[in-house]
Length: 216
Image (cartoon, rainbow, N blue to C red; front, side, top):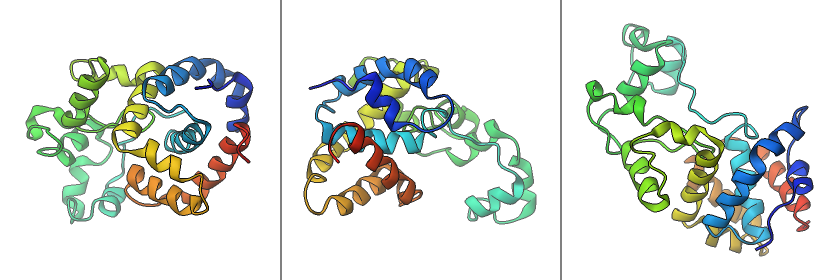
């Protein structure tokens, strides 16, 4: 495996604070790539393209849950079927997380606080007690006891790489080297995102990561 260089990493990013982000994230990212067998340029390019879009190019490490009541009805129409219910959770991130994530993904009920405790964190946002526990077992990072470890660069990068590896995305990225690479990249996007949100942005970022790593 060849580690990505400072220059390569910088070529993948856009914006005014590239040098600061490279300095902050390069070493944790290299460690995460090594730990999870993201060990070829093809795998690295696909992984980094997805991670950069998911995290706003390494600016966001935590799920945004400060929704207006109106937005709640748009995002979760079945959970918030009317304005009165939405008003109870609007601009209440902790209460909202405990409500919408209760009884799911290994979480306890709303009163347990698990929804907020195990809300989305990391560069590919890990969500739910079960996912935190699985990551902790695989990595030795005790995210179950201390979920905020996923807000530090090391935990944020490592959890994203673990998600990637554990969902078979290294092998999918290998297939993206072929003639149907675009279609495979869409499949990768669906496995991470659950849909194709931001697909054009992801493809543009993939073009940058491949170019930076000498693939295009």
